[in-house]
Image 1 (cartoon, rainbow, N blue to C red):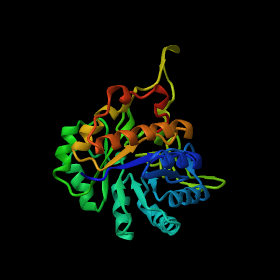
Image 2: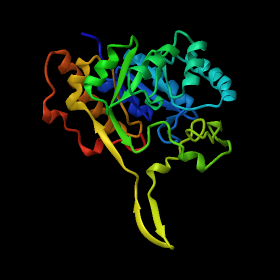
Image 3: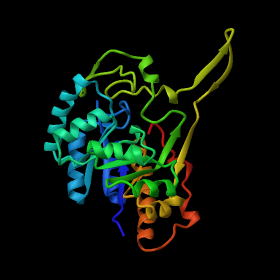
Image 4: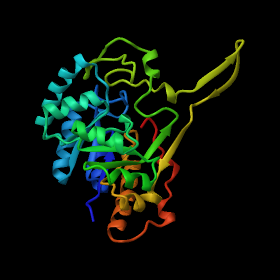
Length: 300
């Protein structure tokens, strides 16, 4: 039986500590200027250093979610910054852009690099593409079925991550064009420095304005006809976790850097218990698989 890794999110020092105590093997965080999450749920470098210290004390690992799409000229600067983060003890990185993934693998060949869910991998050909680029793992969405994951796992040699707790949006995650309509200029903020924006794919390096999560008004001849949010659906595949693990999933990943520590901890604990039940040859009971609405991911 393979060793299953539980990968949990954290948007603060308190959340990271809670996730480790609840049973996460790895915690991933966003760093200011490196994440599509904007300023929500991102850490300063000092906070990241604090999370790394927590990981060492717990005997666990810390990964960085660098789900940005840099222009070619920006990659060299980001690689220099990454070298400094590795010196602090960072254990791995989650990358959202194929070109940047290739550069990271070439510059730091011993660093585990995971192709983010934003890379859009959905089948074995997609995963083989990122495997050829040097990725150590690829994140698949929880919208897939266990038999689809099994088919992928049977064709690839790298690790398969499954985002079992996530929000499915009407756009393909990580491929949104909408933020680019709002801002095209670099900005500078205290503690962050220059934050480049304006990518036609993702709202730039480290910026997502999340216009998809704001209410939209529909007018006709100046008269308001409707106001609504774009559709999004919470997906939590806890009830199917045993089937996914049977299919060969190596890493169980949770979304939710927006969750506070008091909500993140019981969520991580629930999935840890389900993994341990499977490892012990037990099934997850349907009642235990139900997740309260309070665990709905907001802002990823």
